Length: 532
Image (cartoon, rainbow, N blue to C red):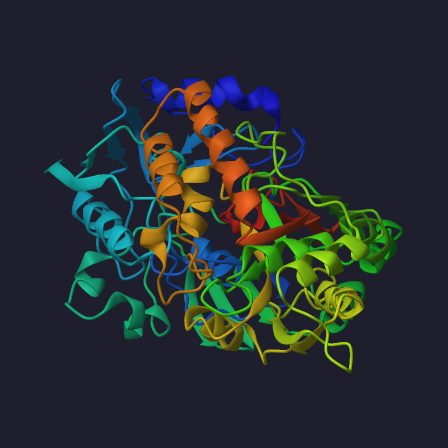
């Protein structure tokens, strides 16, 4: 998030909004109307467990979910909210209620109308089931004075509530399907015969293979989408996806970060390559510790490990200079980032001395103790490569590390959720506002058997208090002061070693027009994309 957008967002969050304007998408050339038809094939290295973004976070789910389900709002590339299911909205001056005025022509894929009852059901379902507990945490109820008005009532001012209405964060579910009393996390309609009100309807979902979606002819935005079909092909082998892109079998490949691929793609005249469209995501690559396990429960061990890791070597040598080091929990592009952090310059001798002082002496074979390190599959440049580098570095200070691979994302996610790990590489998003994407990792109330919660089991009452207070402050300057104290504490207590910002890029065929470059990039509806 560029710093200059800070006052714009502050004004957006603290004032009343009733914007009815042009939808977010980069417009086609003035002399060229978007063409209709065609099948867009999107490549992905990740496999979603299901397609319901109301109860599951992450890239794998978000890309298809934002095509199938519509949300109240969407955002442009300047962090400005835009109408979507809600044609207008208003945040109360006290920040404790948000009124959504819904379109009257929106229907679900089964023909049923989208009403305020569906919005109320969905928001309360997200509050109860989504792993981002702080995102809807202050929401107490959603009033429905009429079928097209939803009023979200909150227990305290909630500065992130407007951003929380985004496509990947607030899919509106059909109450007549999901309100049948079944557990939403395991509901059969999360994967089969999924019904939303987005621009595309599900035709086929074969986990680990492909997701096929076809144009919804009764989509509430007249004339859209332009494409006939969107196919998401899942393949763990990025090299195969790259070949598919070069052959023309794949037209869009989001979330590319491999340095060699980026260099290669930059010279390919058939594609466009851009880092734009990931501003809201704010992805950090990090090493997480399981604080319930010895010896990682010992702070000096964690600090020794941090002191053995050379972030500059990782970003410059391993990542080809595309990535930048990160030293704290909030990405540098956020207005809430602060420079006063506890840092750990690489020093192998000092790291070994710290382990000696903590009582972990090297044995006859030079090893002090053994640990495992897992990594998120599907992004070897950020995950596996760094895990193997860390193994080599820790070997130098007497820590024997086994790098463990997971067969796929669900297998890795199960390990994280069950806390069955010592250390794990991970890529975690800030999600635009710390309330949504940062708090979840550090609140002791969010230690849960769910991936991308506080799986480190980190607990500090002072941090809980700081984040709880910051989450109820509308004024961004006052909020920042609380985040400064929070960041200093967590970089000193080290539940996580922050390594680098993930250099995500979007690759798309030059045959495509209007590829999403909003703050949510590929986690946005594809209703504006067309073939030239």
